[in-house]
Image 1 (cartoon, rainbow, N blue to C red):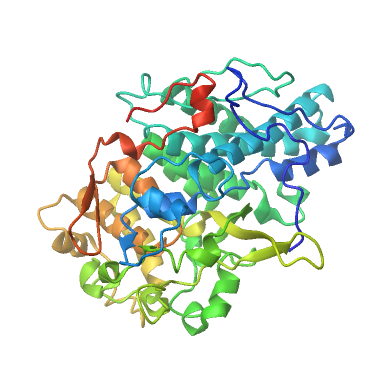
Image 2: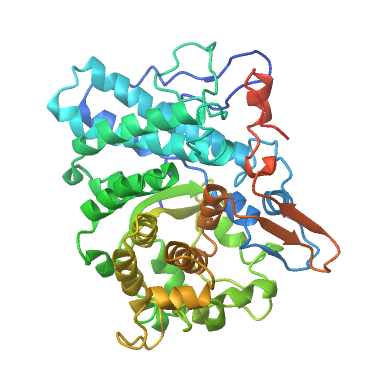
Amino acid sequence: MKRRNLILYMALSSLFVATSCNKFLEHQPDDRTELNNAVKVAELLANAYPHGNYITMAESMSDNAGDKGGTTRELPNSSAWNYVDQVDPTDIDTPPYYWNACYKAIAAANYALEAIDKAGNTEEYAASRGEALLARAYAHFMLVTFFAKAYDPATAKTDLGIPYVTLPQKVVEGNYTRGTVASVYENIEKDLTEGLPLIKNNKYVVPKYHFTTQAAHAFATRFYLFKKEYAKVVEHANALYPGSTVGEDLRPWNTTYNALGYYELQAIYTNSTEAANILLQESQSEWGRSYAGYNYGLSSSLLGIFSPANNPSGKQLAMATKIFGGTEMVYNIPKFKEHFVKESINATIGDAYNMVPLLTAEEVLFNRAEANAMLGNSAQTISDLDKYLSKRIINYSATADKFSVEKAKNFYQNSSDKDALVSSILTFKRMEFMHEGMRWFDIVRLKIPIEHVSANGKNKIILGADDPRRVIQIPQDAIAAGLEANPR
């Protein structure tokens, strides 16, 4: 893969430098490059997506990571598993690095929007304006998800948010506040609803690296699921996948994937040719080379979640047949292929990159299924779960394996229809997104308790529903610059 200039117009190389309060953006864009036409603005937007990877911290904090009992401790993995605040903003795959990556993306979006406004916001810029607004909304959403409490209608107006930045920073000094979760969500929704109708898919060479209308609707299903506006989740999912069409884009785990070897599966999983991938982003990350060998990951204690006895379908899902590795020190499903970029032609050192699926068809299906369950539309939930299981159960039978409320309630006894269906969805999602960090979103959104137990069973970390460590600490430089720290 050709190495990109990750920040064509450097709006921030470090956020919140400790030497002066209220320094939010340290560098201005390169004055030698003028954003004086629609092509240049569109090119800038390649940098409006976070080039950092959240998966290491999200997966390590979740209950998808067990202690394998090894002696090696890589800090991005071990600090997250132990809920220890990480402070070095230069360490890739850490919260400070991801925070910076998101604000760099936001800065690129804001400079693009400024250039569009200066050009008169004409029709030739409309598609870029839509992409910039969606990219800005997405980066802020990811920041508020990791660095603030999950949206709760009862407390969102008082819960600390994150700075929502809507203007390019032209001077070093600037006053920024965290606002509230409610205010951040209001701004995200404003950008989302304004930007979505402007997007034109035919403007992109490789659409899956950009916010297409499909990606915008997929993001909206995630946003409104967090906001608990379930009718809007269904609305946006249906706009993307009307009727039963979502089944056409689901990963073919029990057919095509089932026949693939390790490296074949690794090559296709995050490829733009894979129909399930709706939005992809290149990120500097060592996740692909490291996740199998990290001490905190898919341990033998977690293999049971893939057992037919531990999911409400009662059947073996095909992902379980693609767990490779002779010991738990390297158990993994091969989802990520590293792209290594040398510093020069003859160099032996360089940087590791991964393609990360930011939005997928599977997530949209699960979001719609859960929203319909919450709305009492059990039949629609069952319909989506049937589509999903038809691509997952080995030797699937449309009659014998048809899902039902009864199956869900037999597995989750003494539950209501709604609760049994939602629990079923969460169980399938946990398996589906192993190694992808998605489990953490459900954990914070639904306040799911977690226990991290040491391999010898002697030490236990309990993360209760309201444990402040669920909210990742904002970077130390941000705190030194005057932003209020998250409680500890």
